[in-house]
Amino acid sequence: GRLIHIPNYSIVNFFSKYWYNYLNYYTFCKNKQSLKKIHNILLNSCALTLARKLKLKTKHKVFNKFGSNLTIKVNHQTISSFPSFYSK
Image (cartoon, rainbow, N blue to C red; front, side):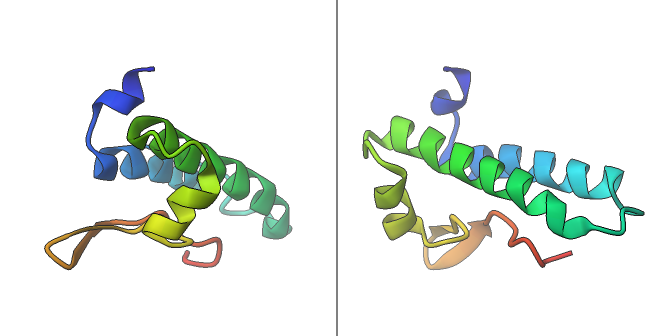
């Protein structure tokens, strides 16, 4: 409920912080591939939150609008993007 009242870039930043916290906690983990499921859950949760806020109904429409990394642009400049799984 409360996330849909903040700007789009803040929603993406909110979920991105959770992802970076998981990565930081599991820095010494040998099998980082197992974190892919958590990454996908956070990415899809972010997409569904944006869908609810923008009344797009499906995450597929959100990914069509913002791209696979949920890139938020203002005046053709990227201000927020969900990190890819291999970005760190």
